[in-house]
Length: 276
Length: 358
Image 1 (tube, helix red, strand yellow):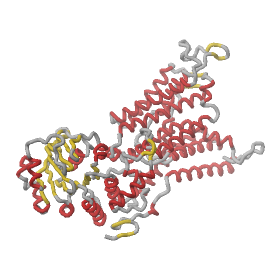
Image 2 (image 1 turned 30 degrees about the vertical axis):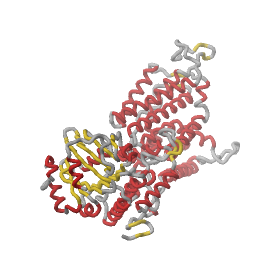
Image 3 (image 1 turned 135 degrees about the vertical axis):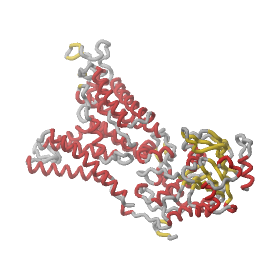
């Protein structure tokens, strides 16, 4: 499968809108982001299929988080094209991406400290009883029920969901951020360094949640520095270096040392020679 | 992996660590301050602070003093409701006092009577144009629009030029005061129509303050607007990533604060039966102080309208208490300053304590 992916994304012919194959959930082509003179992301061709768990690896500043911010429309890309779920998409903001089915656990978690669990889960897309524009009445009952369902689905236990985030431990915060993605029927989940700040047990719980997503056939993009975790949880590893993709490796065809060689720049796949 | 009743993998939650809501502390402080004045009153004045000690008046409490306590804070209290929302987003509004002065001048000039004691009121601002004895709705609408316009200017400046709220509202604080003075070249505007005067008559300011406080309490608690206000103050980046229109929401919050400033201006000028360019000086700081005493965190995201109302009552009790003890106004100001600083110190201490639990 990986081999036909290779030819697919490195091929010179630009696919037209709607061209993306049916089982590809997300595909980017020529994705580029410049911050002024800094080329944070250059010509990235990426693809993930249904049910697939793909790891994104790379050194600090390699463009991993920048890539995520472009596909989730937290920032607007400089150039390039994105297909999601078979359609060419131009999300105008993070809410549009979320409504389309891309759920993201950001590195910063993006939680409001003074709000409780349901408030955070539904931040920006609250369930409304009466729609009165900004003064719409909130449906707390429905949001609490949906929160409990989301927590059950991920196996996260938080005894008091009315507790505010500021009173929670790092692991609980991470679980809340992950449960947020599970509460909604996401088509693609993205996690940016979900275990970077966690202890051993908390990391284990987050990894269990990721395995549960795999069993449910939900595709996942995982950004991580943890080689063991990546080898354990993902089917494929895409390596970024200095804003460019430099390798696309199937887990079976590689090992930790090989991946490190790509990350550090000792190796580059021939298809990505321009990144060398 | 261990499964405990409190969570998977040893993720436990200590429910006992929850602290009381900030409002509870404010309410306790209010009671303590009342008790202190009661005690000092018995010792020094041989009179009760709040209880009725006159035989010729019925009732358990000293009705007149209770009314004064709440009446004297209700107008600044209205401003404080708006300032509370601004502070909850992590901002600040220094312009509200000047907005009150300017709005009072402009609204009042459309509310003047045409004749005083049978003689034409030649000093009315719009006497020459015949805009006197207008229906009360006109000055009210003009006043509200004036407040909204000021709030909108603040909001747009803060949301779209990204200058700090402190500077943006400081600018309007100075400019609006200038407009207030320029409007009549410094002359006071007096003699409102009976309809306009009725807005500020008797306990009307208290009724208006109470209604607005209840309205905004409900809005902050049960609407999307309230939720987003807290979210922005709590973590603006998270709010943005969650898809909240942060800039648009800030414009709305400052506009509502301006509107409340406009309402306060109308009530104040109607109550005083006059408007002067110097009206509302320092009101912005008193309003901020009420919010801070009421437990609104200056870093945003924490506090409630109820807290601000309690903060306003503490304010009223202190002013009344000092008058009751026949202490000079100088002491009031000194103590007021100390209380404001004390409230912020207490708030920071509370926050540090809750943060250090993990």
